[in-house]
Length: 183
Image (cartoon, rainbow, N blue to C red; front, side, top):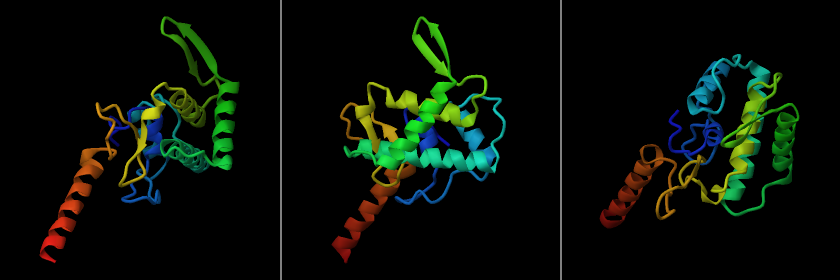
């Protein structure tokens, strides 16, 4: 999974779907090992966490979809749904309840406590994302459901990544124009 386009490890977690459209129906991983590998590569969780089992994967997917619903609504300028917002809030509160705090020259760092596992790491990553000053730059790809932070000069980025959706969208638009002219 390429995470460079998303702009934050929590967004890479929310983007662990391979939908070609707006379905969110297919995961980009086959099992807990695949999910963990993607999250480690994205910097959303540290190396060394145990591979999540079926229940943990299901709980992570529930957190992913609640987080996606909240952030997608925010990107569109809508108020998030109550149920999804409460699910996300409960996960973040639960992770913060047992969290450890470290103080250094760059301020305070919040990390899962000694009992914290995969879900705590993901909830704290979402907490970090939601507290960013540049959250007003959050966008959703016009072609798929991937979310990203738009740090371009004109803030006009329309796709999660040119290689993933931009090239396809441009090719589809070209074919549509060509059909209209020759049709």
